[in-house]
Length: 116
Image 1 (cartoon, one colour):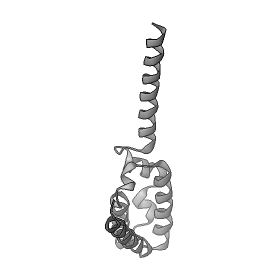
Image 2 (cartoon, one colour; image 1 turned 60 degrees about the vertical axis):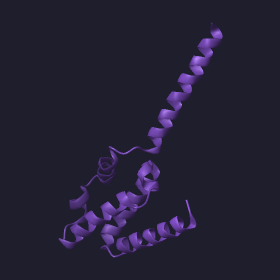
Image 3 (cartoon, helix red, strand yellow; image 1 turned 45 degrees about the vertical axis):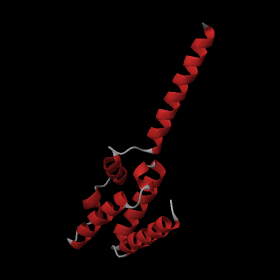
Image 4 (cartoon, helix red, strand yellow; image 1 turned 30 degrees about the vertical axis):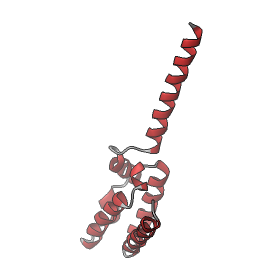
């Protein structure tokens, strides 16, 4: 990653956050909770720019423009809304599970080979 990539990434993030700050207050509250949730759950895509988060802002901008209550946009269970967004994305938990499975298989093979 070059310095130029880092600078461009920061510009994109600032632009993204300016869009968030332009949303109505209730939308901002829900967005920030979604962002925290997604950062904890860890979809790998979040480290590759603002794609998923920008999509959420797009949806929120449309909802706000049409005068919808934020919970009409996301539903009452915001965590379920998030889970649905990332259901087909690879998460860091998935990578960890794969790694553990591979390490156990490798260790068991070594153990079995030694026992022979």
